Image (cartoon, rainbow, N blue to C red; front, top):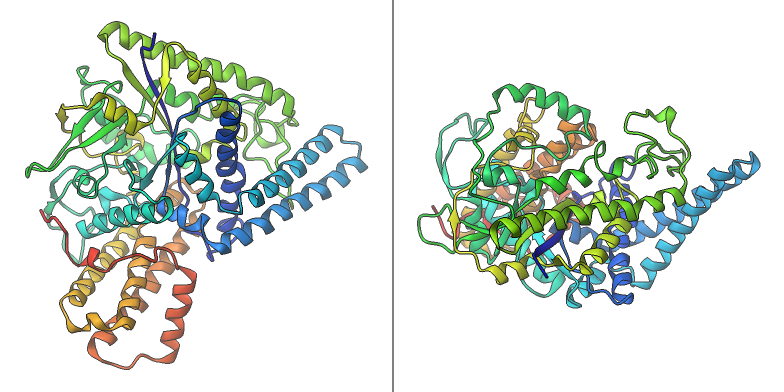
Length: 578
């Protein structure tokens, strides 16, 4: 007897790295994620189909990730990357054989095989990862949702035009790649803000005055988005637990500065993550947006590198690498083991742990759903959302765990797999509630993205938002609208603003994961924006633009050439103003 439903949700996203470095930060991030996460997930779903299963997985693919995976420069770079990894494994094998390091030799040969097979598979799908995802959606085993165009942090952006552009570009880009409209959106960092009189956290043009802002939910429903996902503490209060805080020591230290000011909301036991609710912060009677809630109990079983399955000592260790090739040859060993204490990785031992971990996870899902059914006599839903890169990149065996879980739930007599849009249509929620501002971050607020280390980034973002909106407004209301050179400059200006606005930069600064790279990227996009804005001003004034300036524009457009369909009008006025 079916007692409820389970939705496995993954969020695939990486910032724009094409032509912005390779290693240690840059293109190798994208290549690693493609080899260790995106292609293995595609393979796992196809294997399940071939074995006679009907899996259901919901997966977000951010527009900026889609643009990169579809780019020819990535496809060429990825082939080179795979060949380099194969060659590095072969060189490691020679050394391990020479010194009779049998287990290390076995591991190096595994890597040679893994990357060789990945190259063959990439060529077999015509080097088109996006098309492979689309095919799975067309087959009915994958539901693809979208995200803010460049993963801009919605609650802290200062202009409604920016939220409008992030959302409209997301929908337009989704239609370009998947030939249909998205039904759901993963809000960047699961960050939400309702409608209210908002005061910028840092001054804008020397002022820090409040002004009316639309709610994030309004932009979604205006653009045909039916649902988004929130953290449990936003739904019902209580103490929140950040999903990354035990992975980054810097976040623990940063949280220590904010923890004394954090007062959890009193928990509301009338609300539950098992139900779907509607949210609307608009007084105009707009169609509300549905919310699904992350299950907190099962979340840490996978998220936590210390207490979750990825912390099992048999699995491949993420941190310890052998250079110059960069391959990993060691096991987690224990959550307390330092790099020097890591033991050699045994693939067979790692694979042997997956059935037990998957069975425990599925058992917990069935237990939670059964308990809710017993107490409420309702078929509830358990939503398990994770960053896609956790499966394969952070946790190398993760895709095999994913496969086993999907297979086991599909065979369960207690729980059924579901897509989020499918469940929304099934339950047709009518209860409209309000939820507070917040994110998935520790304390459910913005401290990871707004703190003493990142405050300067918002000053530059706010400055550029103001300039962009002013220039866009001038363009749509002037005869210069027929000037295609000016139009091209303004579109590139919009691209630089959106890249500057990516929430990744603040996250990388706060976690110290790639602080120098993030600070450099912010500085570069800000400086490029100012140069392009100066060119636009010259164009408006009818002044001559120097050949060197045109060369800069050409180089800028070649380097940051995503979102061909970007529209200046999005930044000129809000379609449905407050």
